Image 1 (tube, one colour):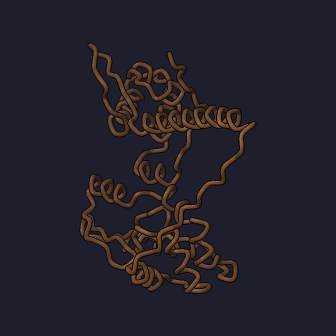
Image 2 (spheres, rainbow, N blue to C red; image 1 turned 90 degrees about the vertical axis):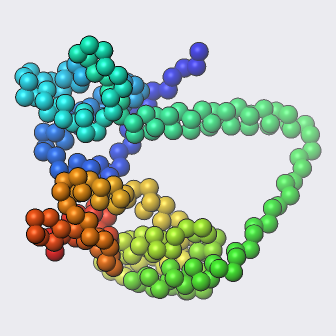
Image 3 (cartoon, rainbow, N blue to C red; image 1 turned 180 degrees about the horizontal axis):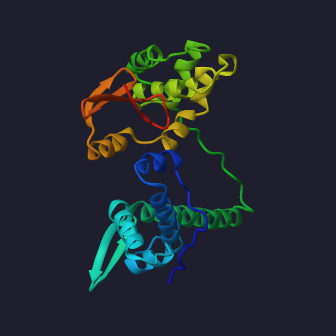
Length: 261
């Protein structure tokens, strides 16, 4: 029987968490954090509502009601037995499986690497045949031009930036890459210290932006559930209305905070 992995640290994407819990009271935020930590210590396996009440130290029905509200919003029912409901957090299950597969693959690669070294210790090593990289297609230049035209700050060599874009950004949406750079540039007050576009692309900093940014689609969906009407995008802003007032979200704001227009 394969030993189950237990991970003591849980990666928390703070931007996403903040956006998804912006409507909660501080008490419910604390309840959600406790339930997340509790579920992770159980290797993301299902737990009962009684366990949830116990971990949140509920002593009355008022507290239990708040715990139930958090469970319904952020967790998934995974079965009912009598008065007992079982809960799962889908994202935690996926994260635990991802880490388990990752460490299993790393362990297997290490084992095979050790065997390979042993097998070749007394044999002549054969140099690998290099595989040439394909030449970017003709459309890449026009895609890069679109990316370049959307930049708020065009720092450094355009030619070098184009070469790095062809290598690292082929197949990606130029609007998303430009928006990621503009969001980064907006955080640098002294533009003298702003990275050249070619350097930013070569270091694949857009991946940091992608992995840590809040998904604007999820934010729009959550605001619609709260009664906001989505009116569409204009320039860098997502437009909303509610109760006769207009609101907007600046896409350059990494936290996607909604403000009155």
